[in-house]
Picture 1 (tube, one colour):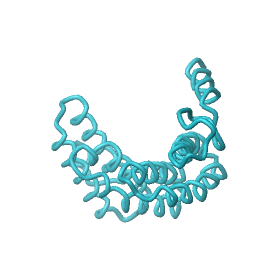
Picture 2 (cartoon, helix red, strand yellow):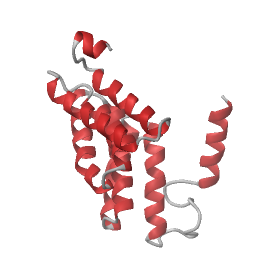
Picture 3 (cartoon, rainbow, N blue to C red):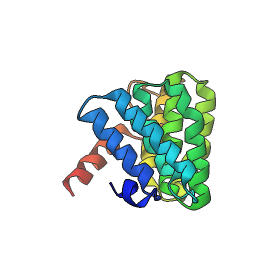
Length: 178
């Protein structure tokens, strides 16, 4: 209602995505949710600033588009979201765009050696930016890649060079209890 009354603001695309997620999850209307994601992306073109581009791309291409569009179509938008997020200082959304980019590349069958190389480039950057949740989630992707490449002593466990499955589960439980 505020967007209709006062015009588009930096938060309008995020609000539109929120409605899209509700439409998807509560009403089960996947096409309707995607349409709201499309509207969120169109709103970005009307803004004079890029401060919410990364967050909007991350939410749109992670929570709305995969239900009705090929996952492959999210790869370039994730990279754009990363680049713009870094430019405007939204390192949280930028690193999540990277994480979902890497995961999507794995799922769509991109060359596994290239995914490993990208993980090794981007993971230290996430750690340097102190984006530990995105980094930990990306370690899962890298360990999966290493397991698929046969580079772990037990390829059935997420334990190896970059993470330890038991420690990860214990940390998650400790965080849940905090």
